[in-house]
Length: 453
Image 1 (cartoon, rainbow, N blue to C red):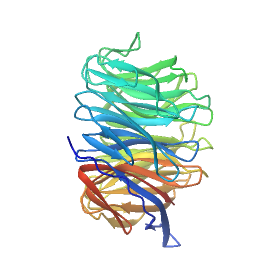
Image 2: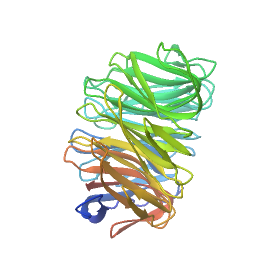
Image 3: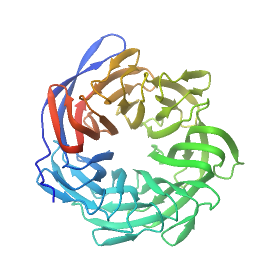
């Protein structure tokens, strides 16, 4: 058995954020930073702000993992981890679920009682969330589970069929319902109901009441389609993002053919009715990984592309193998602006969050060097995490690279009510955040940090 270690460390550190336009530079204060893990590979893939100023996180652990005074031991190759952190970054509770194979948590959002909803996928034949057992129907199946304020699982359900299915994002509406985004490869089941088209792939969007009852389910079908993430607008409309390739059908609209893979954002009413879908053009091989909606209903989406991406008259060619794109839309789907972040390496846009006063913040990864708002910044190691802030009009406000000499992967970002931004992901061996270093216990360790933009 691997020897657990005390893996959460706290520090007050400082970072410098490069600003576009005067003033040229401003200081970004990091309130706390922490790491957690063991000798295996540990990673945070999803994060959400809790109503009390804390954070919910989900991802995966391997082997023995220490989260403060809480020790978790995976049952297989990778287990799902779900945890609550206080506003000071202290672990309040942490639980795991998994079997003998690969099981991951991808998305998390707050539930009405101070708990959370979590989605992801599992390859193991059987997994348990507390007293709730889920049985796999094929390759990977998706899941949605609800935890209470103390970390106890209230209910859990699976969806999927014989192929590779997954839940990737979840958001909470004003009534406390969970809206989940995912993908079905062919036909499958959700609880006892058939869902999806057996002839292709299906982007799944489904709403569940706080007690776990299904409110509605809708799918977009195509030869190649992925439902990657979801955000809820101020009118409880649900915005789904992902990619399309080949003939694709949204709602009752006629199928449209997409010869190359393109990113999309689609709006559905609070009742699940399809309203519109917007696609980024160009020979982009694109993917929308994240979507966010601010308090005024402005929609933001981000991801990565290869080759050329376009929206309206704005076009960008990738500077390297993959570049980051970020775009703004009105609630009616009007394209407002498109921006690019990138350099000669592989650069990813992975997480978005709306800012309290409008606009959004983006996180992801850069390799080698990248143009961040007109300023070229170099990564400290193989890959660096970054955070970039944009105004509602798409003006670049600030950016900070974060990382050490190895790989730093920032998957998730969440804004809290105090105006802070929170980043989460993984790092390898050791990383540097300002003047503070974190060291892993072996492979990849998870990290979370809170900073003031």
